[in-house]
Length: 348
Image (tube, rainbow, N blue to C red; front, side, top):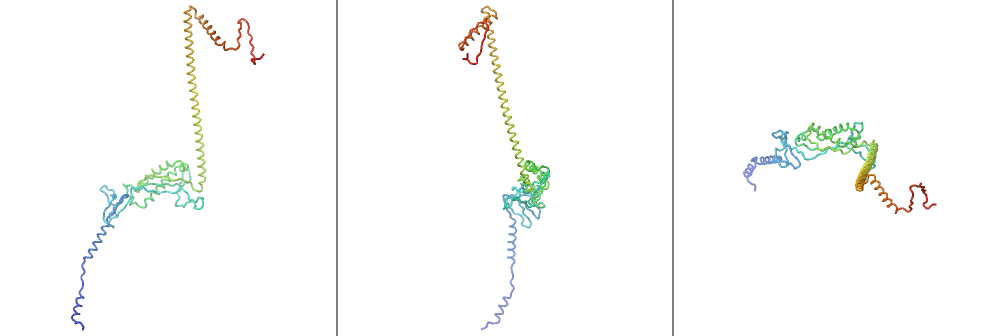
């Protein structure tokens, strides 16, 4: 049996009433989005870096006007796009290389080939020679000028590279090829370092130049063999000069030793001669004193006493010599003497 019509009509009128939605869900969703957006304002600064916060494009500054640097830690600031976090590693030593002093070598052969023009760094010396020089510049971000490093116009490293090339070109242009190639690396390094520090300070790059290192200096490939010949000749010259200096020093040392030996011998001979002369003089003086004493004791004159002493000395001398003689001949003083010397002792 079919249902009554009034029942179906009542059901239709109940389902046709409009449903009213509450705004609670939209508020919750908006609140969650705001919380998430505010949470993005937290940022972490690592131990090896410092951070600068820019609010609406302007960096935070202290009362003194310097940029506020935030060290390692967790911070919160207005989220993006109200603020931006710029990071910089102040303790990191960076390196910029200028040029290349080595020529490329082909993989299959040992023949030298020309480098690409973009990798070449050739400099003209004061005596109109060309050399390829490679220089490394070590620098770090300056704490007091970090804003210039972060917000400088253009690439800071590219500007530093151009300044280094300009400084090196000026120094090389004032030097000769031998000085740049081998002899004056220390002087060139110091000159480039001083000039580059001054230029980078004037350009306000926000960096501090730590050091400049000359990695290598080489001639162009086409004339490298001639440079090798010159270097070999210079090495041979230094070798010969060192040998000559060593020989001269040895000769001077030998001459000095010989002269000192002669002086020592002369001094020794002088001392011995003087001592001997003094001894003979003392002996003669004692003999004179003895003769005078003898003359007084015997009531003789000094001349007679001297003659007796000489006679006595002669007899003592003959007494010592006679036993040593194999042949003894007695001669009369009043008769002439004829002594014949024979070459053969046993000859007739």
